Length: 249
Image 1: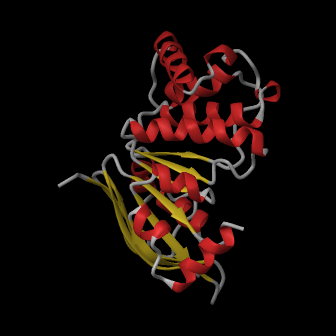
Image 2: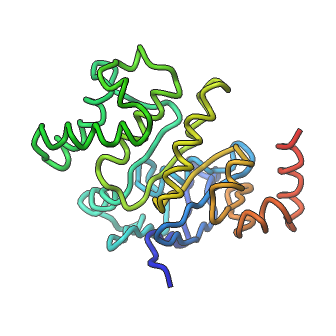
């Protein structure tokens, strides 16, 4: 049996009274799994991802990562900080520090969170930038990088703290079509290395190729959970079939 790295139990998120975005979400992610979350816009995919590291606080339910479990209804700030140490997030909009070069962006968390010395952090950052094909741009500021290059730097930065799980929130949705491929190739290489990841994506062919499991979300629930073959190639759920046929247009 593979080791369970993430466990989500009966998670709910209500923003305003009656506006329930997540409804009784439960699933697990094992070590080395790449789990893709697909589904229509507005169905809670990004909210779910943000609830996993408490960037958005759930209304109720339990999120466990590694040895840390946080109960939405009874949690402390310390527990949330411990939970966050187990994951790193790659956002739609890159969120790089504009006044720092690519290598300084990657070094930042190593210096401030891991308290590494500057020389060690610099060497590790170089290795991570090389891994995502950005070493030759290490001294460039974000304004001098394309969207795809910025996102690859953001991926290197997310990897810098040695997370157990990487969270990708539609990492290509803010990119021009010409930059999408290079970012998807970078994520694909990480998945092949066995990096555990949860990926919200609208790139269905990519989900089929990279994910070991696919979750289909509809109206705030997980409506289907299975292998790419079960979910994408041979969908049984009528809403899932409708969604996939719409995506193929």
